[in-house]
Image 1 (cartoon, rainbow, N blue to C red):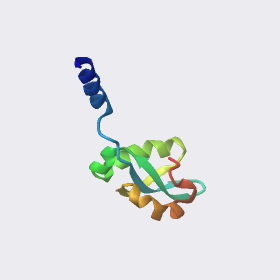
Image 2: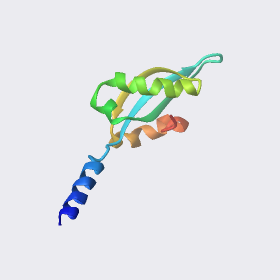
Image 3: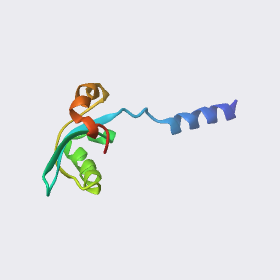
Image 4: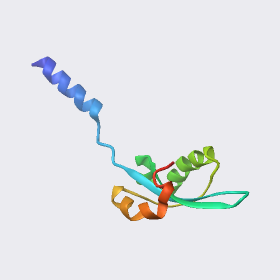
Length: 96
């Protein structure tokens, strides 16, 4: 019985809370020639719990690695906002 209790406690401790999905919509650019895009990207749960600055800090390096400069993060939101943004983001929907 003690082993069963220990195993159950261990599973609960390792499982932790379920992770909620968090997303940000943003605008980015490339220079020479000038190109702009609107996109949607998944960000950490911390970005949803804090302000837009956290999402900017996460997205800027990801975009820079692909040659894009983050202009601004418009908002952070949960999965309920994905459907309405998918068409507008096009190829940049969950790309970065």
